[in-house]
Image (tube, rainbow, N blue to C red; front, side):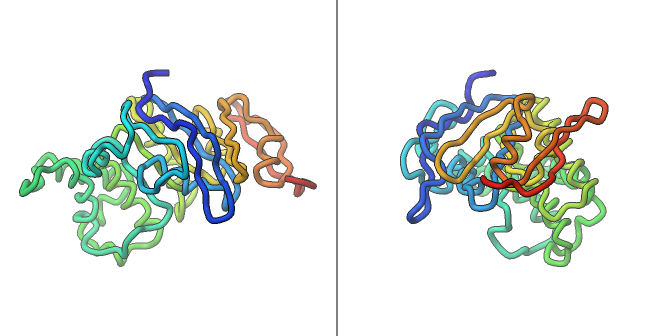
Length: 261
């Protein structure tokens, strides 16, 4: 692993009356794709927001490139770390192209306007998510899946070194899910750091190098891809799994509901 770009030190994430993540420590270097797995309400979204510096930890700290993330102005953080929320933080406004171009905002100085290079980045990002033909459409008129891909395109235009993505495949059909995750995997091959929560463990198996398994009761288990077993998924989701292979692909098929979680 390369030197850590993002580091969690003894991180605790809580909601009133409950500790979701406790004493979590991890280092993330360049070229890695990490998948967060866990049932609903186990803290995946809150952990990602905490790692992004958008939510204070109950204790512990997040370090970005060796410094506490809170020491950086948010504009500087945005040039190095990009966050995709599970749902939009604001109602959709403006055209698709204008919305995607906003991803360059953190890279522009005060009073500086977007350059031809910035608009070129936006055009390429729309092509990468198969939305190039819809640039002039009002964002609010797009389908849920199209808006999701628009949000991913804006993150691609932001071009951070670290991508934190909360359910990036929400609202996407199977072909779009594979296309988006293939693109993220390609970014990792080019040196980016990818951390994404995923509901489908088989997508995680196909694309991630390692996993953070969230129980929602404090401990987070870290596993390499090849170490994930059906018993781990049964413990996370309360459903029995069996392992199968199709050529070079390994996948887990859900079966009966497990007796205990």
